[in-house]
Length: 375
Ligand SMILES: *Cc1c(COP(=O)(O)O)cnc(C)c1O
Image 1 (cartoon, rainbow, N blue to C red):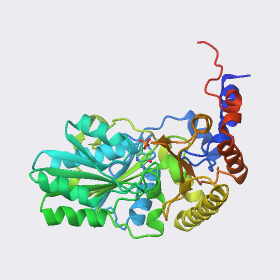
Image 2: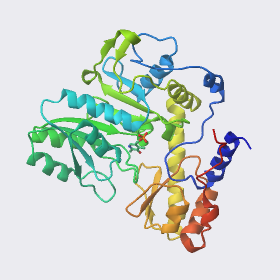
Image 3: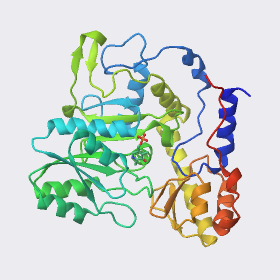
Image 4: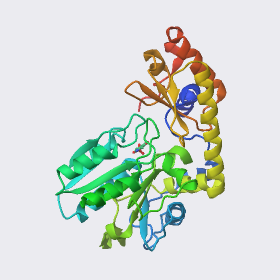
């Protein structure tokens, strides 16, 4: 078999256990195949001069689509498609650190993504963890305690709009009140890597009201075959310098940027029929999550979910089940993501394994390696 056939074979083998990580696989980019033989590069600001090899028109269309979801527009906000959500969050924190009048301190909850302390480290600023409630959402009394004990700082709060393990939501509106009552300088970023693609379709999230920036991953709910992350930010925090060499502004973290990712994201949104289809996809996933939760509980499996989440949290998962199934885990919690790829047949296999973990055939469960010819 060819190297590519070997790789495809491995991916197909692992498909039946791919129930945890929140990456959608319901997409089709066959119309892009000719693009794989073209050079594409979105270097610079997608809203500035159009370059010959860019996919800026796709990128701007995707950004303006998310601006609409977050009730803003290009007069008030700016955005670009970063290589992943980590980069988008890093970007927002970096821009605000430049803007802050005092030493910046990065705050996030116990259930925030692992990238947040790394971002603090990269920016050379302090990171403090705020306690979470048991469902994962930030305890705002703990937030109040931290900022009132050290008010002479500029705080950056990365609030999760769907934490990775429990899809919990940090209340940005209430957090903002906590900052305002304590009269401390602050900036709120919403990390909506997964849930940020659909929650604005059913609830009110207005950029510039309770938060100043947000990120949404392209490869999670939406479905892009490569990592990607949209960043939206209030314009006042964004600035770049004109570079003659590229005839555009240097305003992003990377120089050269992936020109395919915006096309994939555009395709995903278009194929879903924009807001309407995305809302329908979310509601179908939500119904699946509620149904699967009931089935799991009928089988006496210890699990629960947050109200608007399409992810189910399994408690105290046996070690061998952790090892076989491909899901994120943290503190004896594992996450099932009820995307279209997660079928009822897979659920029943998982239940069988939960009920009889010693019988799991680990050897054939999943494959990591595949053969490639040496170069
Ligand atoms: C996946 C995820 C991230 C990081 O996304 P990458 O694209 O892997 O950098 C950040 N926050 C949350 C809540 C996530 O689920």
